[in-house]
Length: 251
Image 1: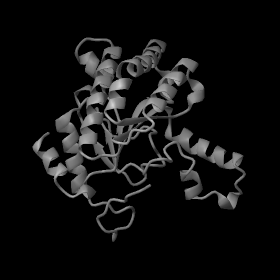
Image 2 (image 1 turned 90 degrees about the vertical axis):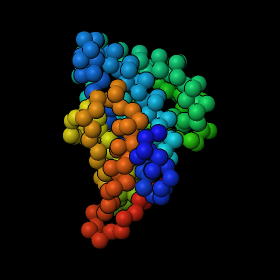
Image 3 (image 1 turned 60 degrees about the horizontal axis):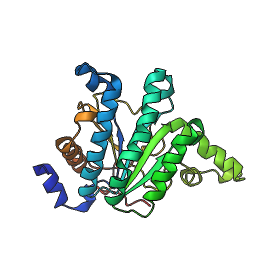
Image 4 (image 1 turned 45 degrees about the horizontal axis):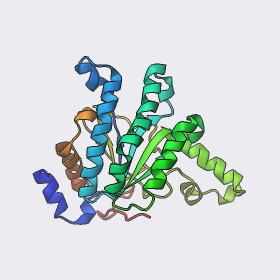
């Protein structure tokens, strides 16, 4: 643990975000710099995710949500899309037992109708095998988009028979893909880009944004602790300039 990480671990728990969301960007560029195919970068990115889950859990983060595959990623070359799908299957087979024994609870959030039965079965296996774990809650956003999430919440409200006057923020929040988790306190994007790319549009309304130039496969202890230290220095206002410096406890 770095000096920053040690300080965070021994300081006020309110300085540690309950929920961290990450756009894991830079796998392809990381591979290209090494004259390797993009898929090699995605493989290394999965190894990084395994390390980062443990790092955040050790530092007291309760929820971690990562953007694995967006609804826009279908526009990528067929070979890359196919490789990403297979990587999920490989990841479940290779790492599920390890994650389960480390106390990680896994949930998949996104549009499941657009993926294969084999992939849905792997997701079901991962969720069932980790359902009783509580050390850290890992949500993997796959075939997910923030606009899709808002639309599907509205559709659920209609199917549930809500009248227009009953459709308020609370009604929609309870129908979002991440309704089981508090909104992200800290939103991280790696790879040097400074945009949120249709990720958690509803949930990130008051998230603290942190952009790192580090390419995702290189994201490690130093970068995790730098992001958490930056968060600890922020004064969270939630739209009110007079709001006290507190971290909401959420659901």
